[in-house]
Image (tube, rainbow, N blue to C red; front, side, top):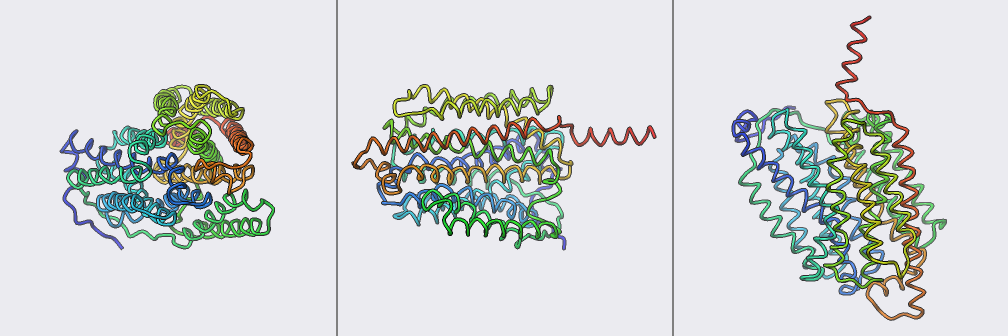
Length: 502
């Protein structure tokens, strides 16, 4: 069935608006993407106050952080499909409204469960924003400028991950943990008003998409069970019957998801892209680097609060060199990869990240804050050097008509890594410190043998960072084993030339 949007503008009409409209549309998607994704990590710096104020357990705190990226990961593919049916502008603005409502609800919550529910509402809003941002940009820019516009939008979205601790520290320092949520509300509402005024729906004919509900449900269950395994393993033992049972169920639902995707006419994940070994390695690299990088923004914030007793605003500032490194190195690395290829730069970036994690793996109670900032800065340089060439490699390898899908799969791997890293951090630390003592350390309560408890906490940090180092080394090997990527157009041209010669 085909459907025509009832809209106010066609792409030709929008193009006639020239510079003015396309950049206003880009400003809408960039602002929405930046603040909605920043909210995923701003919460970390407020966890200590949430535990103390609401008497929340460590296990529940993990889900307060983790549920956001989990819901975003599973819902973006579904929302991307319905945007072709119901219109990008309407769904994008609905996402901003949902994000504002979720933030308001979280800011006035009085229990950990209420915050989790509010975070789910927030994350559905974020998923709607992200799923419609790329199509809005593609609808607003002429064909020869879409790549540049997507690059700017991607830079803004990626920057949100690294600037989140700074923003969270500032808000928490001013008004406590509730301000971290309530501060989103006026920004989201202003972004909504700006979008309502500036965005125009495009007129075009589309077919009704079939949403892969069965595949989406199996994927959701499999990932949820996997996160439970990682989250609970440190508390109740990795070889306990419950953990083994949950792990087996996660694998079973994962296999069911794979079988459904093979038969689906419109699968949640295009398996033809995953079967390409170079694309698969690129996706695994972004997953491993995202999992490793997530340990920094989560564990170091806690370390600075518990061990160093640093003010939230100052904690945010300690992340500034790390943020600057990623922001400035990424575009330089992207330009260099166009000249010298992606494999070398991506691999070198991952190797630099690994060295940074080795440094963090030697952390102790007396480690200088400046030294920790240096290792973070090194990891920022590494990720900035890796990310742009790796993304470019994905776009070059993927067929032209599947680049949007390939980009969506990349985002799914990125977000999955972020969600898993939180569960991994808590699980490893809880293997060294009891749940009760860890909670007491969070709220600053006196406990017997407190120095030993801090020492155990540090051992958990060191172990986590060593595991992050190992993940980076695996990513280096995967990245370096790839051949240099040529664009789909170049490969097609070569095939045509060979055919002509014969």
